[in-house]
Image 1 (cartoon, rainbow, N blue to C red):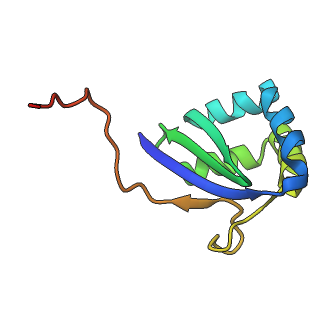
Image 2 (cartoon, helix red, strand yellow; image 1 turned 180 degrees about the vertical axis):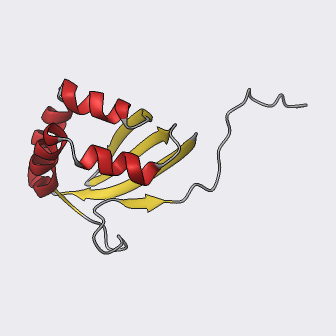
Image 3 (cartoon, rainbow, N blue to C red; image 1 turned 120 degrees about the horizontal axis):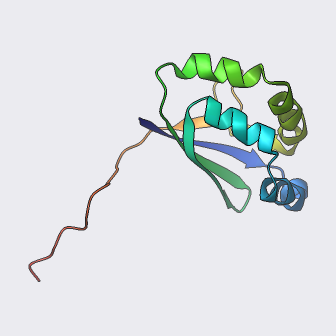
Amino acid sequence: MRRYAQVIQLLPQFRDEYIRYHAKVWPTVLATIEACNIRNYSIFLHESLLIAYFEYHGDDLDADMRRMAADPETLRWWSIMDPMQEPVANALEGRRWLEIPEVFHFDGAPVMSDR
């Protein structure tokens, strides 16, 4: 399993609409996300910055992303979401979301302090 974090700008005029859509994500889109080996997927909003986090449990992310991009309902969802967003300044050419490298992760029990 690999963890991913990504960012993109939400255009301010679409804030309420974006939140409304994500309160009721289409079941077909969720099924495709799951079929593409993505788990524990969250999107956070800070001011106009969308921050996505997900865990990938497959063996070939590129193949799974092509599979997702071939799904008609996911394409329809993206056709609604994409105009609400714009890539951040550092996004790679042709990529909407900018991947953020992980620099720390802790997944264990809290360390007991001697204090």
